[in-house]
Length: 297
Image (cartoon, rainbow, N blue to C red; front, side):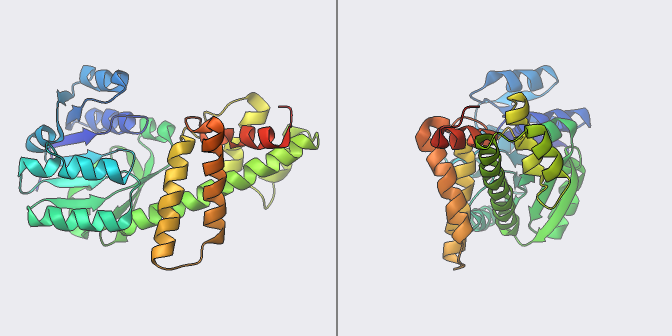
């Protein structure tokens, strides 16, 4: 099957970069309205066509990429009154770049297969900066032949593509990856807050940590908050981080696997939400820690 026309549902921080690169590499692009008009209008200005429903996107596309918040939004996009399955288009491929519950992913894939639609999970790593640059990392769960068919499209916006196995395994891996990354963020935020309380020089802290065993990508991003009041190096809302961590702890409980640290990290982000940081980016966990400890920034 030759993929020529791509549908994109979810033109947000990550979706805009995906759509921009799909268009730039010569594929036709169909998009749907987003609560933020600016990225949609930009893609339409670059040649994308705008549609009003997921069903219309499905009918007009060979491959539909989902880049929505989580499982409730994925399920609504697939099963809703004007959802993808209502289009009744056999042969359609749906690639879900969202962070979602693996069990739901497997159920959706089975229900799609019954209608002649192929559903695979293709969650992402990295940030909106890499999305714009076409350098995302993707995990892909599904049949290897499907990955082969859609790889030319995925390569327009990703330079790392890893096949994880059957449908659902990519979403499992994504939850594990996010737990590790957000766990590192929580540890880094606490360490930075302790250093601020102790009047440690932040440049010295950065030099020592990044030059030793405590170094991590997340510390490198978060240290920009005390140094430059800059949280743009991890543009991921705390509410979404908390959601992903709950997906992770639910997954480990269902296995079952003991996940003491997973629960601790989840509660750290839950506390940040209750204190009003829901819409702030992950690096602002440092501000929450300072608030709790009465530390001047």
